[in-house]
Length: 146
Image (cartoon, rainbow, N blue to C red; front, side, top):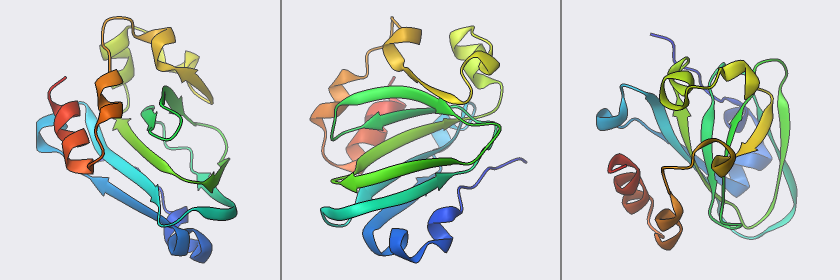
């Protein structure tokens, strides 16, 4: 089975020293979700660190707990250089290919290669309560309940 893996974090020494990245496979979400990933700074970053996001044909729901934002992001053409600085606390739901259309009835090619605010696409589901949760396990449990 196809499973995209974001490997730059494995190869970049500076990233590994400063940022904790994990992928969580969630059995209850496996029909539509490849994994839930988390990315947190180990300390306040004093300089900008690059995270090279590889194109993988997946659209992610990306939750930024520092800035309290949620967006969709997916890259299909080129590696995206995403800059990380100061405090980092992200969680993402990596949707399986074609699931975005099944869930939101929007062609994925209209969403790829840019970031789109969650509320621009989804009006019925609110994820705002997740911002009140600090623990990764609590956040995952919340997502499983939606």
